[in-house]
Length: 99
Image (cartoon, rainbow, N blue to C red; front, side, top):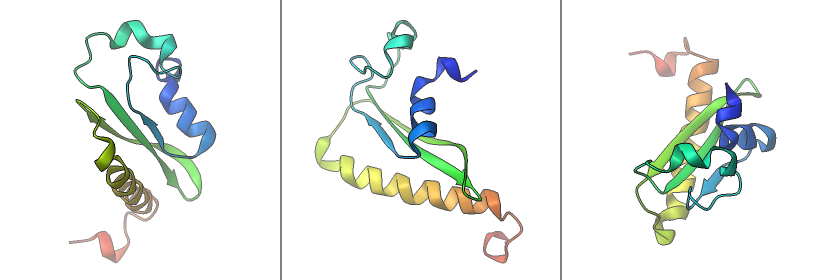
């Protein structure tokens, strides 16, 4: 049920990556804040995954703490991975994905 995952809804609605540097102070996560109190990670990054141009889901990275210097590299890496994942889902029988 997506009502428990407002961060996924935000990515689905925008079709853009979302970086939440601190889950405990995030406005997006405010509705589920009580469920996050014991969570061992601080930062979450979500990347949209599309299948044939339509939203399919998200690739999520969770980190114990943020490091702003490396955040841009992590964002670019995640975007590339989510595109590759979307291609793999859309074309599972393509020769590039076979052994």
